[in-house]
Image (cartoon, rainbow, N blue to C red; front, side, top):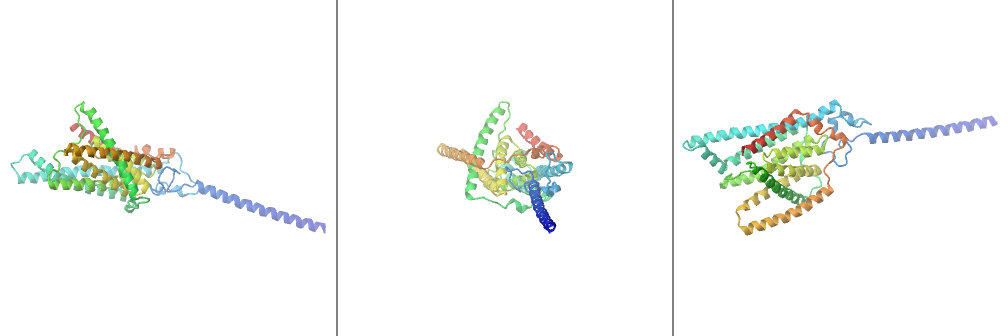
Length: 395
């Protein structure tokens, strides 16, 4: 009888022990699954970088398909396939910048010669300089630039987005943006504008000692009534919208796949060089960093378009006051300084709350290190730098 009791007790103890082992194994498997899930990188934030704007660069699995595998983590150094995929996006950006330069430069030269030939036919007794001055003072030259850059900027923006698989709708789905933020950003940009103007003036003073004038001569450009209207439309509407579409729309998205900080700096450099002179390079570079930052923050080019339109419009209005009487000019200057001081505060507040994205060690190896191996990217930089040097030395 005791043997039966002992056997039953042993069986009960064994069953209890087996159940406990089962429960422990189940918990262990659940913990392992949780750990594996934590180790699996988010395709929208593949480098687990809290300073970046999640999802702005798109799904990283298009570059590294293994990213969706449980437990897979991107290595410090990219393998050959990943490096090639990242370089492809940098090359797309480079090709589009090359196309944009060649198309706009070529179209401008061809159209200028065609218009000049027509004018020479209509006015055979007029000299070349007289005809060119007429083109410059009327609406012809301004309108020509407006049409050329409108077509080239928009066309290359859509080419780049189609090539890189970027949806046009993704550029305007604005998040967390308000009128208050628009005012804050415009004032901050105004401070950047003032700083760049004084910096450009100082640089010009240095260069002028060597007989080089870095300032842009726009004397006599669009002096007619129609030319003035064309200048306003081009400067205050067409240029801001199409440039934001090209630089913060297409180029920033294409270059942000692996390193957002690199993309911000690179697009600002291209944006500055595209203006072809030192004063506008300074403004465009500094402003380009800020515009790229707010584009990433709000996942849209709408905020940057608004700020760009404001700065170009303000610059145009303020420049028109150069011939005003001393009282008006002094009042306008005092108002500008007051607004610039407020803008400085707004800029400090913005950067205090929104740090510029930093790069992790993994991202540093996927930024300039890979872009420097992209032939189109380097050629685009060389072309833009070469053109600005040519303009500088030709003055």
